[in-house]
Image 1 (cartoon, rainbow, N blue to C red):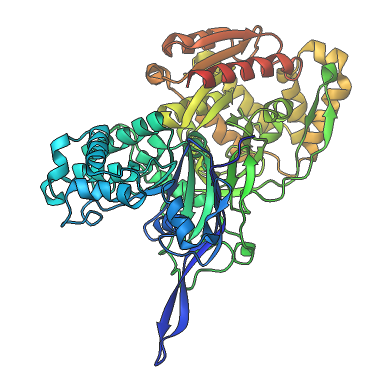
Image 2 (tube, rainbow, N blue to C red; image 1 turned 180 degrees about the horizontal axis):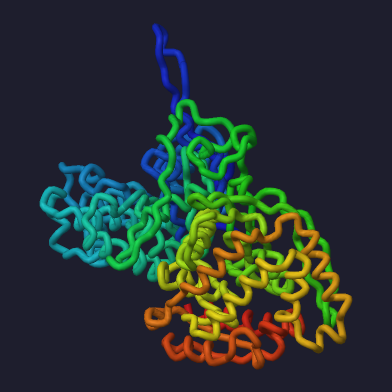
Length: 616
């Protein structure tokens, strides 16, 4: 594996605060505190964060424009922090900076030719005046300026032109690394685009490596290969740009991204409003620097210093809540055809979404996959999918309202409100977007989710579901509710089995049926009668049929060949409404065939997600 061009290890920069008669040090500003990262040759590392978090100080400390308090900066195998002045001057040819303010960074008493040519004189790269002028003209043309500009003064140029002069000055000595310190923050939007495009063109042409410092997240997303997020002098998250913007994991990163406007007036992004103000860098909080403003904090966050941990390849997060101890393994039950699944009845993590306390399961790594269960089923109903899905994805399952450990409101609610629950859970877990799989009633919730927040759904799999109830479904729904009211818990579960399992399963695996029944009876969090009735009301009122034409994400609609609860005609109705939706019938994997051939269903769903990911 290639060595990084730049290595920064445990970099610190403290500014002393002096006071008293003898100007003794009475306190310190912890501007940069134990920062570590690498930059590979040819890549762009974006460094983002609020104003005052230490971004610019980090960049200047790397170049030793200000002396770091401690730490190590290694450039091409040489320790920059240990170099003497003569050696450091020689190294400056390889490391340059583009300053933030194009007005203050250019000497108003010098012509453009003198400003750009000064570095050529210092490093003896152009011995004669003619050679210097030729090189300056070449650099001006490279950054989109005219040759006759070399005899003008900075006040004769616009802000965008001045920044181009700053870029030409940085390029004069043919550097390998350029620290771009908020190079577009002082420019208007149209000029920003020109400068960013210029930097990208120069990188492609000269093989440059950038440390791109900015607080405009949209600009950073456009230009960066990887992104590092700083808060109060520390890096809290580093990840590939696409991964960080689609799946942020640190609560501070989530809050930053929630503030980025969506360029579509019909779409709204839910803002994450942080508590309180940024603490003082003079006296930063103990433990996690962000814990004073974090909605996910636990008591130990104020005690434990947070370190970056790799949660997926290349994705590092400094948050013990998100990288903490994994859930202990659950009991394993062997199923038909040699397959196995996990059955969880143990308490799960909790998050509050609005007035609802939701319980969820979060396992695996990779692109997020949100599983939404159907009428009366809790997270344990996903047992047959967990092993296969979590081998390739970060899988999030949860208990809907009224089932399992999630609250059961007394007031009526709709599938739209249940979709809002799912969105709130995604926000709480830092999942910006996910592949979504909804089964039965879960498919109805998934429809509302994609129609309400289409930018949050990367692909949509609707299984054994419908878009609007007809007289058959309403009568069936009523029968379900009457059965639940009239029977006790065990009788209800045994009767329900007749709707879920095929005659083949009953004949060949009575031990499996009984084991699942006993597992459900042993669940200390059964569905309440109120929850059952409220879910039935939500299903009866569901109607997304006329709106499905607005769905634009890759969509797969599946139904069992002989589903006794949701006939194939309901699936075909949905396919006819959603543009370019795929339709598949799946043998032995729907209502009436529960657990008989889950391997076919799992393989079909995972293949669809893989194909959808390739198109994005």
